[in-house]
Structure formats: structure tokens, C-alpha cells
Length: 237
Image 1: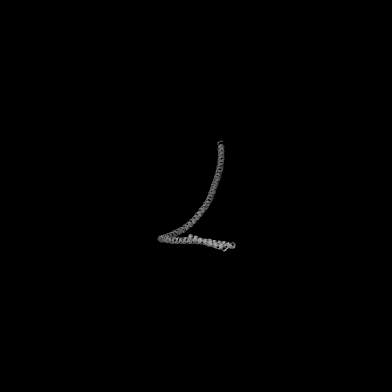
Image 2: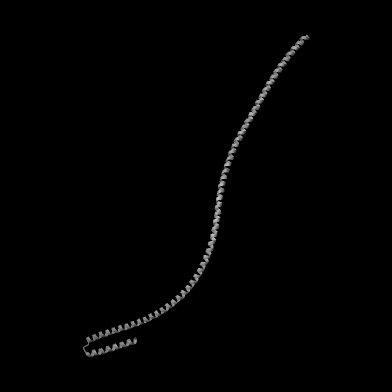
């Protein structure tokens, strides 16, 4: 009994050992497989993480490259602007240099013009002084000439006045003579008229008279009247 039990126990024990061995083998294999799988999964995970990291790095690099490109373009634009400004500044500097040269030349020209003006001012001052002296001399001469002309004019006026007075006197004498002549002529005309009237009267009386005595008497009266008329005219003259 005990042997059987021992055998059984041995068989059972061996069976158990075999089972344990199998189990151990299976467990080891499973564990090894599981570990291997875990390692593989872990490796895959690491690879995936690495890929993701690389992808992220790549994306980051692309982003940085893009930003770098944008930055480069921006820098290029800024550089272009700076180059343009530099060109503009150079152009301005050239312009300023040219303008500065022009201003320097203008300043020199103005300095020369100022010198010329001073010389001309001196010349004009001298001419003005000479002109003033000439004008003063001219005024003195003109004053002398005026005084001389005034004296001559007064002398001439006096002479003309004397001539006019003489002519007025002469005209007055001529008027008196003319008046006397007119009066004389008028008296002579009256005398002629009276003589004509007397002759007519004599003629009429001769025609009417038939007597010589009457004619003699008429002749005596006429002679007496004529003598009286001559005496009257003499007294008037």
C-alpha cells in the first residue's frame, strides 16, 4: 500500500512536475513571447514616437524654414529698401554736393558782385558829387543869367516904354494935326459950298435981274459976304 501510494505519489509527483514543467515552459514561452511582443510594441511605440517626433521636428523645421523664408524675404525687402534708401541717400548726397558747390560758387559770385557794387557805389558817389557840383555851378549860372536877362528885360521894357511914349506923343500930334486938317477941310468945304451957293444966287439973280444997278448992288453984297466968311474962318484957325 505504501508502495502504491509512493508510486502514485511519484507518478503524481512526476505528473505534477511534468505539468509544472510544461506550465513553466508555457509560462516562460508566453512570458518570453509577451516580453518580446512587449519589447516589439515598446520598440514600435518608440519608433512611432520617434517618427512622430521626427515628423514634429520636420514640421517644426518646415515651419521654421517657412518662417525663415518669410524672414529672408522680409529681410530682402528691408535690404532692398535699405539699398534704395542708400541709393537715394547717395543721390541726395550727390545733389547736396552739387548744391553745395553751386552755393559756394553763388557765394563767390555774390562776393564778387558785392565788390563790384562797392566799386560802382564809389563811382556813383563820385559822379553824384560831380553832378552836384555841376548842378550848383549851373544854378549859379542860371541865377546870374536870370539876373542878367532881368536887367536886360527891364532895360528893354524901359526902352520900349520910351519908344511907345514917343509913338504915343507922335500919334497924339498926328491926331491933332489930322483933326486940324479935318477942321480945315471942313471949313474949306463949307467955304466952297457957300461960294457955290453964292454963285447960284448970283446966277439966279442975274437971270431975274434986268437992271445993272441991281446986279452991281448984288455983287457988292456978295463980295461983302465972302469977305466976312474969310474973316470968320481966319479967326477960327
